[in-house]
Length: 153
Image (cartoon, rainbow, N blue to C red; front, side, top):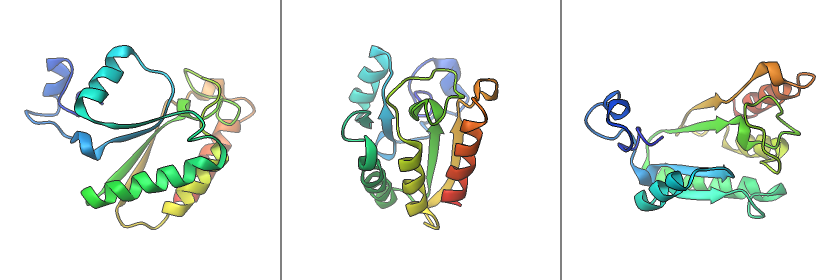
């Protein structure tokens, strides 16, 4: 993310060319629970909007937050991509990730939200990261992924 924003190590930034690929006002992070101090300082300095996991995203609160953020981005951008790190989802719903951290986003609430975004012409795609099949408990994460993709598309 830092390199896409034109920050961080020079060799990594050079992969993307001379200019940042993303503008900070066109990036919103939702469900952040774990980060390094330097990461938070960078995001704060750049003015990236961050919604930390807590009561504002618990239960039924996620859909309106995600929808509001999506529509705010749609006002700035012609195309929007969603990058979903599975470790943001509660490990009860998605155990197959490298860094399972309790009290994450509800898989059901995320599915509801993605369903509400279905068919929006600004939505370019969905990227799913941090899937570790070897850690999948009875295929729970794989089934959730299938539901999330079906909800969006």
